[in-house]
Length: 288
Image (cartoon, rainbow, N blue to C red; front, side, top):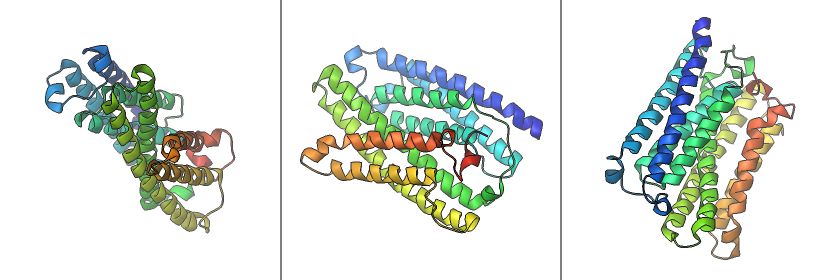
């Protein structure tokens, strides 16, 4: 079984290569039409007859299936959900980003967003290739499989949707810079995606904090300890809340609200990489 665990990294390598092909297919789909119109969404009926669309779907779905296989086998080998270290979390995060990308693609959202999400998931997979991929025994604090599944799954939903929201916001400003206000529909679509996915991220991250507090009480005997990861997660949650609040304002605050989602992204990055810099009770989830 341990030998099988060693071979699982090749499954992830294959998923990474397929994801790379999906990036090329998404870019091709974006550029096959006139450049200035290629970022606009078109209907699912039109897209499904495109060769590049079919290739994107094939490569992305194949990558998703391979990552799901890797997760299932790692969970079987270790006897716990495969969420316990930085490598496993990275693989699962890429999986969630790919799922979100497929959903947005089928809904006919802007092609530029699809290409960017494909590239982002590829970056996460490449990052994971530099981490230790061998399955490791669960430390005592992680032997509650129910809380592990609830806490980390909610975190994955939160951070994948936060990445979608922040990416949509950045693309909105890119579109404004390239085409000014000529494509207001595209800008409205990116704003809508950013707001809706931020709402999901806010709820999911709130659940992450709740389940994490419950789990901390079980494992360590207290609900909160101002641990670096706990603190940065709370700060991220508050920043997303500030973004949602300012976006509902009709005055000057609305135009400045995008800053909060970008701050949330930076804080989430600090949470994700914090074990490189800070001593933490969550150090077992870092560089193992």
